[in-house]
Length: 141
Picture 1 (cartoon, one colour):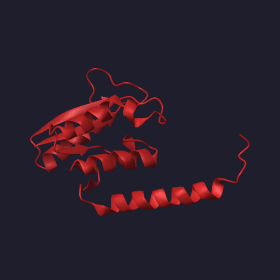
Picture 2 (cartoon, helix red, strand yellow; picture 1 turned 135 degrees about the vertical axis):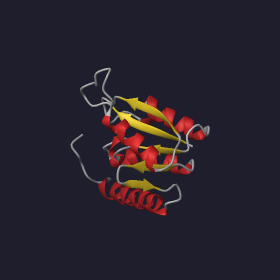
Picture 3 (cartoon, one colour; picture 1 turned 120 degrees about the horizontal axis):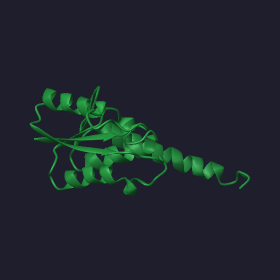
Picture 4 (tube, one colour; picture 1 turned 120 degrees about the vertical axis):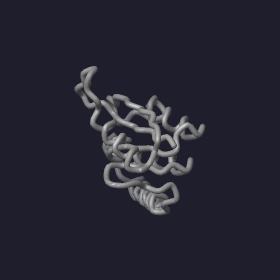
């Protein structure tokens, strides 16, 4: 079984002989959860507002998941998908739909965990309510 380890570069690139600590955490997860191989996906994200479709490595993770090349995903902290919670939620839901468990440093989110979908529904309902309330507000645009 293969785990996909998704990591991001910090603002300071690592030297050629250093290993990204997020990848080390992924390797620990691999051994602790009886995976026998791994693939790494590392990218530098300059702008958090960039559409997720433009995130090359995250899209490679999803492509590999869709094609059965990986069996689960590791990310040391869910915020690595994106510090913006809705984008992180979007990535987790996409992987769940593909049957992928999402491992992180403190445990994992099962592919069949209904709480993520419930949270998404609540978020969407609150967004609709906010949208209705804010229609009459002049934001000075």
